[in-house]
Length: 372
Image 1 (spheres, rainbow, N blue to C red):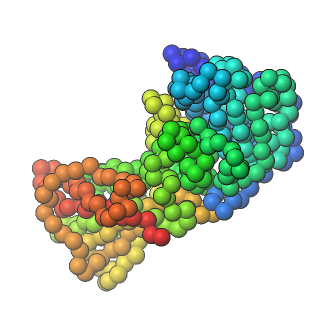
Image 2 (image 1 turned 30 degrees about the horizontal axis):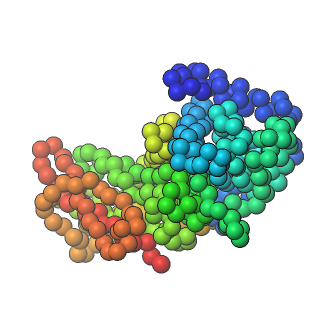
């Protein structure tokens, strides 16, 4: 999977990589189709985890492999000659394809891996695979069968240099990627720790109510804000208010399109269409009418992210408010996202929608601290 490889070459390489595991270990054992429900999402089945190797034409695997390789290389440059890079991966699956690919680039003495998967068949298969790799490799790998979101440092254990978590579904739905950020942030080196992905952003593309659609970035999780992130509940991270022009039809079925962007490490990233996890998905906004349904009134939209057993983005619309904030457009700014710095108070950014040559109504974006 060289950096200059074509898409076809990447796909062929990841297919061959997956077949290598399958042919070495035989057919999938019993229990490979079972998902496990967690407090903060779903651990997908081992079979689905294996399918992720070739998902997106293999680009997903290529990007994660490239990101981890570069992160380990950077760490080795800062380490003493005989000091290994300490890496942890949660949700490794039965083959841990990203982690095990590192033995093509580094010596066993340069890396120490902790690989975690909650599925017993995955942990057993992975342990069998490591035995086949030989004692020198096996001595550098620890396999744990447990919930990776509950991991902590043992007494006297040094923090990890790199944490890898590839446990995300489209638009951060179902799988516990956000909670993985939170859990792993506490066992990484506080000064120099690296998280892969480095950050995940969610965007919402709104319908062209005023003649042009608007794309807004409304949520971001990264190592910078994960340590302050509240682990449960609904986090409203973006509010928008607007008033239709006179004679406009009432909004009765408002939907948005939610997309994701993963920055893995440095230039390694997954953008729209690169993988299933970055596919844009339609999202119907729930609407509450607070006065007579025939009235054409202003609207307030709230975007955010919910954590818990069924994680994912949400959008709620309150229609026909009696006293909307309606101001003329004064300035144009990009919409922001919630970060730890915003927790100190409300921040605001403004943008406008333009229909033909006329300025329309102000949309106010308020960054709110997630409720405790």
